[in-house]
Length: 392
Ligand code: NAD
Ligand code: MG
Image (cartoon, rainbow, N blue to C red; front, side):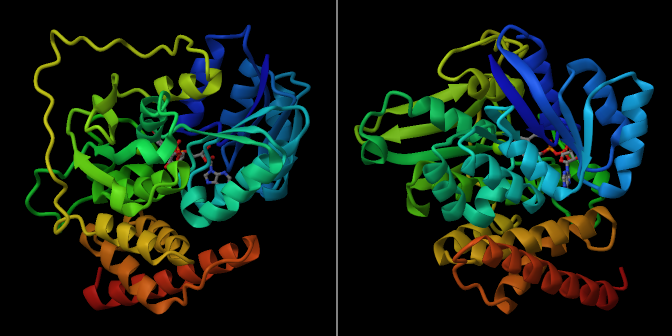
């Protein structure tokens, strides 16, 4: 029986994870669930899954969470604040932690889970982008196990399952990207947040939806793959595959390519990682090859979607560049979602922030957090100036 903590239980990945867990009460029990602000939604989940602890990251909401748990007649312990996230991630009451908080906010609890030797199921790619070397070090020292939830990386993990020689036998990792909602749209100048969040194949949180529309998501995934599979940017390729059926591929030294396929449903990679190395039912529908039609592949349009190139450049630059890239991207996406920045300026904000922030290699978590703060501060400044200049 695995005892699971879900960081970010009220989000899209949280919901898919709980859906898989609910199908296997003989295998999984919930130890703790967390949310940022949604106390009522968290209490509803607590009523259904009966965790020992519920954490609301925004401490001001703790009284609301307490009342909501009491109103439902639950004995679930309520805790509040960011430290409580790290505490439940490291608690001896769980052995598995699903890291599904969005953004760098998920970094410290994810590191805490790794240090405590948990099986860490990573959806929170930003944590690995900001602090790849430090997170992997925490995994090694803590004796933890890191398994990807991101569909592309789950695919790569599955394709590599029989590769006993590791990276030596691999020629290329080929990450697929849907291309997002604007793959064929000519004019991106007046794109709205709702249009950017209307992803053709996946229903996801708003931040990752915008990242998918700019192709920054695939850029972050290249950095994520670099750390997870220890391979280097020159051997990681991105190909656009609008049907999202092939979730990624590995080409081996002998030119053989192995692909992992399935309907686009996050419950498949979640079930894979939860039960690994077993296979369990996920609730995803099966692929029907007879009605599937054509699977197509094309090169990403790096001129219209410059974020992909920015991410490759940050990975090549190394040091603190990926952390600054991530901070600037989170800030720019927030401003776009608040309609304070046009879609087409997101890449420019990131590029200028990278040029202005000193990106020395972080020696520890304090350095990563400082890079993150400075990246956000400079990016906000760039956003505000552009907002004035453009009158937006
Ligand atoms: P979401 O916005 O739907 O959910 C985010 C969750 O994190 C919520 O529970 C929210 O309460 C919590 N949260 C947000 N900010 C927080 C903070 N500052 N402190 C504590 N908790 C906070 O996002 P999502 O789509 O579920 O994505 C979560 C992560 O998974 C992201 O890193 C994303 O890139 C990754 N991911 C998502 C998908 C997907 O299909 N949704 C696929 C691959 C990877
Ligand atoms: Mg993905």
